[in-house]
Length: 315
Image (tube, rainbow, N blue to C red; front, side, top):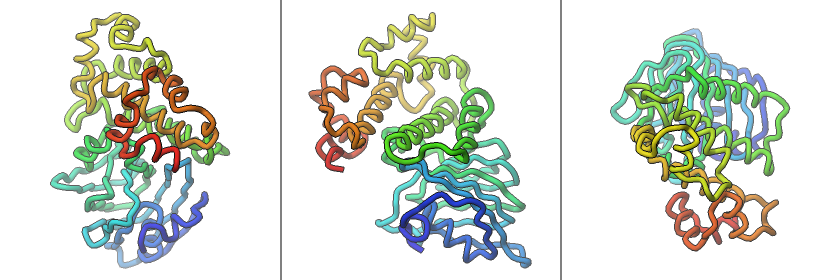
């Protein structure tokens, strides 16, 4: 089944879909995530329960299944597929994740990504339970490529960011607004938490000072609309030197300045796409997020997301 089938045509929230056999699960999973194949080693048959919800452009699915193998190979990938980054928060059961030349055993409590534009393989040797968050690659901007190079590598979710992410994912089961401007804002918040989980953790280690980086990121995100926001101001606010600030971000995928620019552009893009902001000028939207000189905004958006101001407002 091609993407655009069961899961993408008029997709609505579904609870407790009980599936028997790999064929039915393959159809549902292909519709939700991307075209893929499912096989099972248990001759007694494959069973799964799938819950999913749509939050703006993001799809969140909870999958509980018996042992099986999920494969997205070159035959499954077409130019018409939606380009997703799949973030998988693993709750229970042993899973082996493979993409590119990386194969990793993922444990409960770890997060890993899969890029659906390239082949990958997930092997569950026993009953598994995981939450899969599908984020459009365009929503990740400059983070998409660095994360794509770190797929199938687990990221621990212990600590502040992990707790927030776990709470946010559990809250998607509640009666929250999922569409329109409110849904878009919720999707942005969820995407930001996922990026934060990846930003400060390399595949090999958790960098020293990650708690401080978390606090700095939270502060910056709360003050993006302030045009006075700068490395000097942030360093002063956190009682560190500018040099130390840049050192803290040295092991991250983006430098401090590039990360701030990306976060501002992400919100400007969101507001340009929002019908509720159709009457607001581009300059006013840019100023809302601390960009007072929008002269080069179109080129920056094109470079970051592949669309300029006119294309976004037409969309």
